[in-house]
Length: 167
Image (tube, rainbow, N blue to C red; front, side):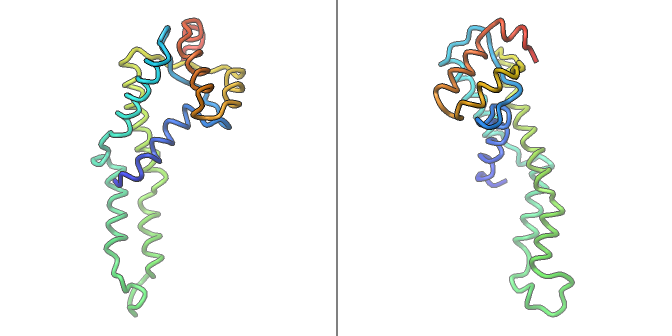
């Protein structure tokens, strides 16, 4: 699978659950008493494990690779031949449609998400549900800002929140 696709997939995993400002997450991960530095280090560690996970041997990646190979191996003059059952564009569309890329990317994202979650669990983190008010507050904070990181950390390190909002 092309490495260029991995950041897109990982971004989908992380930001769909860690949320862009307009779409606050319903769940997050926390560890009672964890420092902000440790919280960030653990997030980077687990994020990298998911990002660099070798998914090339998965059925989803193999299906995408097969479709890519089919497209690459189409005759360059497919539109110029007189006895072709489909045009070049149709052949490409059929290969893409047959691979079902949206589904395959979701499958790969699920594998990476599972890796991320196993890593966080192994470091002692637990999943917790955000309340509607917490989601509202979070949705007002722009993704990637220190304020957003600090707010998420304040929730994720609070033992009371982790025990009462355990997911």
